[in-house]
Image (cartoon, rainbow, N blue to C red):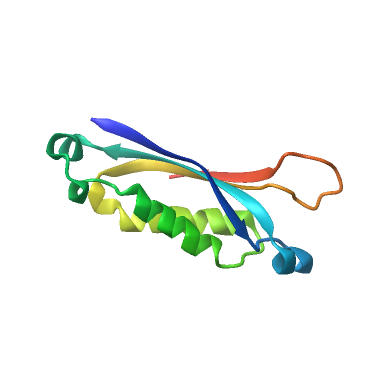
Length: 119
């Protein structure tokens, strides 16, 4: 069985951006993650040791968001790479990571700018 695990609207304050002010003042970011996993073993055993633990996924997000980057593409790519590496043995078959900057300095009012990558 393939299960979809969704971590929605992880709110993090971080310091990503090309402008010096962004790297100094920071901004609010929202991270959304969707993971597709083969879940037969975890579903039948009811044992966290056989499951992709989403608490560990949040830990990866927090660590990668804490590292300053100029581009959202860099942040998203790092999160994807870490998730793929850390959970290769837990039935991970694919997913996506989306990071949204909530107040981008673009001179107009907008909800956010976001980058999403699939793996």
